[in-house]
Length: 237
Image (tube, rainbow, N blue to C red; front, side):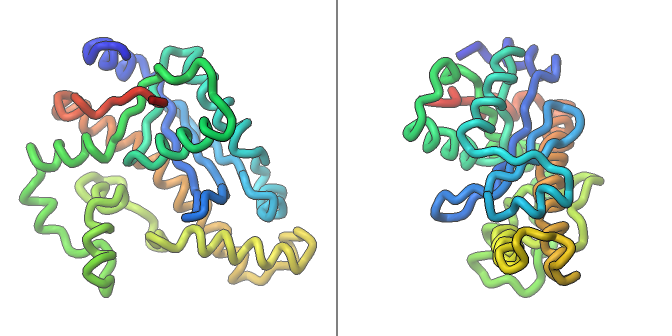
């Protein structure tokens, strides 16, 4: 694991892979969004979403191949995997158990959520505490979870989530599309407008999350890079 100063140099050189998987509670994979500091690339990972992939001109792959491709590119640039929380690291660890990912364990993993909490505590505590609930009408449990979500934190910036951004609904939207495509033999054109809208909104949600991480990391690094300290781990233990 490189020292903190070396990690700063890597951050400055932009050798970063911003990664956001869409996975359900039973480890079914739907989509992954990735950006190496420029455009976001989305890859469909669920065979039931083939019609969506064709309609939106998205690549189709599987979880093992896509993870190996991501990590191979990161390693070739001595880069860092960046994600919001430990979720993506846990996902990669799960894949590693099923299919050993040799040679990638030393890649640094940046938990941007941990850095964001430090950044808020040090520089934006009052503003953050004064924000309204992220979604009006959410129950106490959901409101607490949503408060520290990426989209909620981005309200401290000028990069806000789309109006139709709906926390907790992305997987349900994908599942609705899978059911609709199964009925119509994967022909996207035969879906209802409501079904198509759910697919578009699910893709927008993932796209925003990847772009938001890029903006958030830049804000934190510009204001106080010390907030990033101790937020790195080895990708695979």
